[in-house]
Length: 183
Image (cartoon, rainbow, N blue to C red; front, side):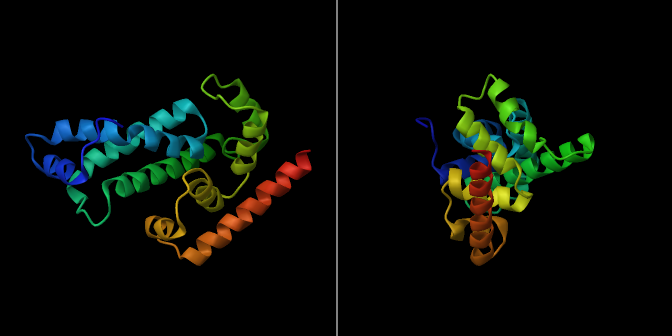
């Protein structure tokens, strides 16, 4: 991220109508890749992740006036990305009238995906994650992949640290059990 801009400067530029478009382009450049991977870990499919990322930035642009600086820009964008991801998964589940990304098909779908560069073990881990309820999946992804602290997660999700820890440990147990059963 060689072209990163400090948050204060970015916020000043975003609030000025003359520089808001340039600042928003810098914001997309600065946080786009990080947000892509947050989204991709939740929705799994590359094309879906790109669509959700685009919707995330569209929503951020439309609601820029509502950002009051109570949180960091990345935290605000992260929350939008997570909400958009969950919304996408709900829509997909409703549209398919079946379980989102049928967990039994996740591993084979990922292996066939040209953008997936993992092996079968990583694909099976994603399959196990896909089998989790939405909340447990979200907490697991934030903690395991993003290494987010429970205190930060609590602020982001508006849930107590204790509930998040419980969700994470239940998710880990379910994933472990799934992977043991598959051996």
